[in-house]
Amino acid sequence: MRDDAGLQALREAARLSPDNLPLRQHLAAQLLERGYLAEAEAEFRAALVLAPGNPDIIAGLAEAFVRQSNYGPALAALDQLLAVPGYPPRLGVLAARALLGEGDVHAAARRYHEAVSRDPSAGDPELAAKLAIPAAPAATYPAPRQPYQAYPAPTPGQGYQYQQPAYQQAPTNQQSPPYQEQPPAYPQGQAYQQGQAYQQAPESSTEVERSGTSFADVAGMESVKEALRIKLLLPLQQPELFAAYGKRAGGGVLLYGPPGAGKTHLARAAAGELGASFVNVGLADILDMYVGSSERNLRATFDLARRNRPCVLFFDEVDALAARRSDMRQAHARQLVNQFLAELDGVDQSANEGVLVLAATNAPWYVDVAFRRPGRLDQPVFVPPPDAAARAAILRILCRDKPLAEMDFDAVARATEHCVGADLKGVVDRAVEAKLQQSISAGRPLPLSTPDLLAAAGSVRPTAVREWMATARNYVMHANDSGAWDELMPWVKGKW
Ligand code: ADP
Image (cartoon, rainbow, N blue to C red):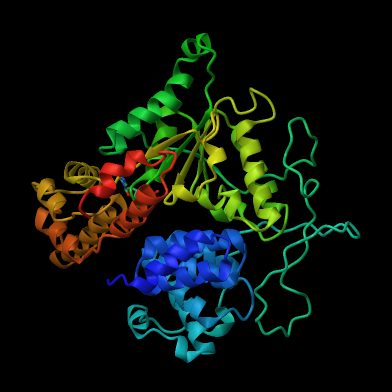
């Protein structure tokens, strides 16, 4: 990949004018085109904060996700666009790639054929070849998934604002508009204040899980696990000791690092380690195009965690919910950040007792500094890409329930430089699939061997660590006034 002066100038211009939406969109598109995927993702996210719901930005973000093999978030991002009748066929093709990546070949094929039947030029021969199953007739095409809750009818004459969806190019032979207005849960333009009475928040659509994993399932990361133990686990396990020092169990940690490095895995394991319930919150659970609804969803999610304490409340991609308010033009986007801060603080001292907030981001530099204050996400913890020893340990964990020959995990670790946990999972999945085929042909189960993993490793391309380090280097070197990223210094100076 060639980084040219034009791109550098664009980056610099965007840094100087963070509010300039067209500029940031252009930079994001250029980064995407040139394959700087992690950086493109971060730029699209920043642009989305400036223009929430903008379909072009969401589509760009989804493409950045798909190209990093991050299929779940891509589908979550695309859902709202695909729910609009007559959505652009190229988005259907993108969704098909994501569905295929998730292993849902049939849904991918349906989505692909539906899209290409409307616009053959959107076709992708390589993808079509992978989806070599007959096209489903249009009549059986299922309704797109609806991530959002059904909305109650608006209260007439309330005069609340809602954000006009920018996405209007759908051919509309239908009677009713695809979007409906939504009444706010509480007065607009005010932060959630201590003691203030609001309309009852609705039930959260997020589910409460019981985690089946513990720190024993997380390979390596000893210092990260230790930091979580001290911050989160010990106060709950030894409350008297902490009470003696006037400390309570609760509070939050911001996990940051390259995508796929194991942040979600770690959060789930922390819940298991503690015997706490686990609430995994994705962007689609919170973000909503209606002014006021995102705040309401956020509140309902915190309430759900409070009802299920002790609870680990995990926010993935938190930079989108906790972005720097100085970067935002629209008051309602700042409102969500204010609400998030207020929820973290709680209405009184004991509101969040036993609620441990873990938040993950690939782009910690976009998180508002107010989140770093005591009692909030005050402890940033870097989740690094695994070194060779950690990669071997991850592989050992990923293979432990499989029939194995004698394994040389160190050799596989050496062959998977720059791979993160998610990539290694891809290597093992691929090797298992190949072995399964061989076992079917042989008529007996064949154990997985080192050459199987090495062969699979040869065909897996490490995801975004190198690009992530390049982006991180920019911030560490040029925007590290408060020393917030000192921990990253030795990493970004390394060879990637
Ligand atoms: P992130 O949240 O940082 O994007 P994930 O937690 O989703 O990454 O990691 C993807 C997968 O990689 C996990 O589901 C897990 O199977 C595997 N993985 C990552 N790190 C580890 C680790 N340290 N030990 C064991 N498995 C890991």
